[in-house]
Image 1 (cartoon, rainbow, N blue to C red):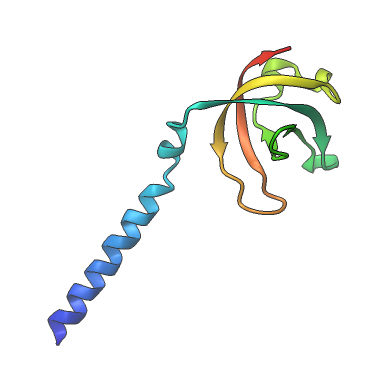
Image 2 (cartoon, helix red, strand yellow):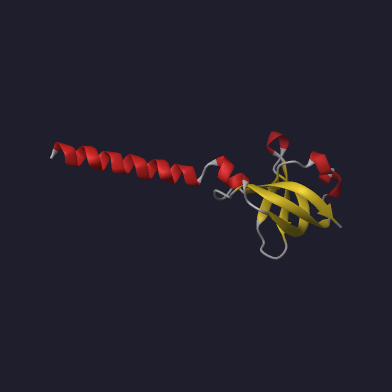
Length: 106
């Protein structure tokens, strides 16, 4: 009976480790790029403000991780097409997906 509990504990621990490897940041970095067409806008206020783009086809809002490298602040309220890499998936309301911009097409 004692061996049964030891084996069961080891199986549960190994499945938990395997599950945590699925969400490892290096696994997320291997994703391919995607093309997003939409309007760039500022969300939030004060210290919590962030630049975001809403995809016009799917309606999904993405937070832009590197807005200063492409001067996206000056393109607010304009519809642009950009190539981006998904950095972090959306968790829920208030925690949108985060993308890193690779290039901009007008």
